[in-house]
Image (tube, rainbow, N blue to C red; front, side, top):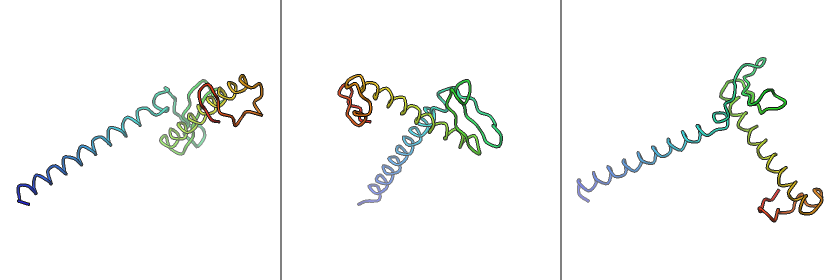
Length: 119
């Protein structure tokens, strides 16, 4: 391979890597901006010796995350948000299964025939 061909190969490789890095940065930024912590207009403050991220009026009615720093509290909030979201989805599907069969205990492991959700 000539020096020109080799240089073009390296230039193409560098350009390809730069494009991949750019896409990776864009994906990470999108993920960060779409976190529940950012999307849900939470409040953040100190609660005793921990940081607290709260969505809602209070801890009982809302969703909260705690941590030693605002970052760890926001990540704990995201985990709590997704756990609550999954619990709500599961409850809705269990009620749907109950409507289909009349019994939650007998059909808790059944597949919902309407939407295909498997608890």
